[in-house]
Image 1 (tube, helix red, strand yellow):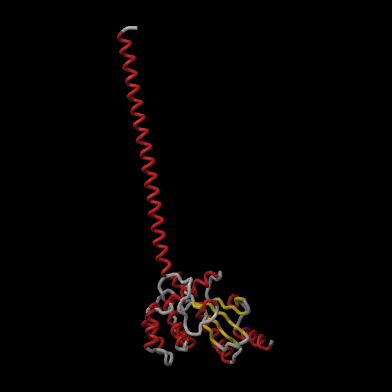
Image 2: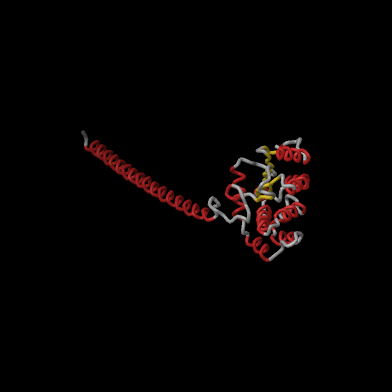
Length: 258
């Protein structure tokens, strides 16, 4: 073999050795990057878990799963219903309503006199559950603020009168008029003896906001979807197209005779 050929083969081997060394170095860098990226992912995951844990702690501060302040005389599970009428009444009407809800106003306007008559005669008791459905759909806080104010009126023994005043002065569904506490206090002036410093403080402090939120949570958990939901004998009579105030009166009177 000539000297020239030997030099050529030697040079080729050297080039191959250099190339292999470059490949080994590149592989080492690749493994280092993978390990580094894995560490970053673990640290990132730890950071995310930490943030979630911190947020979870914050949410618990506004959690209404435990006991909350309820208005005077509230009854039922977790004291979420405001009762109107005599305890001994044989018939019970359960009403889920929202003070911003136009359909609720329509129901109240149509059935109010009949319900008052049956309540006053001792034949019917009504359990009102207040929810904030419209706030969630339309924005604003009028449902919540009005419900809290109605709970404050319950403390003063003026729930029924103030309840009726709110519906008589209900704003358009798209307007959040009830979101203004001063408006709710102004309307309290239409109820004899309600507009007092105690009532005003209760309204402005949002004393029963958590109670209202818990009532709405109960509404959602029960599978109900609309307001008003009016239950008599376990059936939603508001969904009955044949129902009338006269028919409701007949049903209550028949149940009392039985």
